[in-house]
Length: 125
Image (cartoon, rainbow, N blue to C red):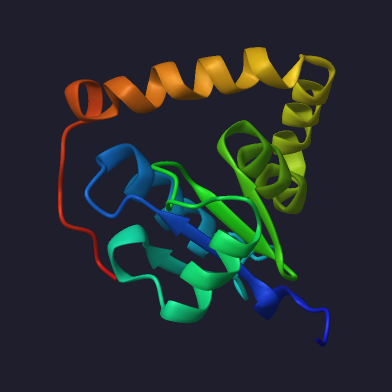
């Protein structure tokens, strides 16, 4: 596989206002312009198989980053994405010093409340 940014796919909840806000922000960032974005409801069979081959029997209800055939979910996906953004977003790399189980607990807390706090919408795919 040729390693370039067009091999990076972000799968997200297309019904979540918070998720759509960040995806639109990522699409406008020059460092992530070549990424592919896909709502979780529209993942391809190839993407689903790759996710399942990487230890997930079910598609996680989480942001999913597919980076050169590697799968990252929850806080790890957020940290990996932020590493591409540059600028002040690089401060998020400090998140690596927080134990993964704590980062993921925070991620899941926000994820559980995302519709209540930010609402639902249909995204512009």
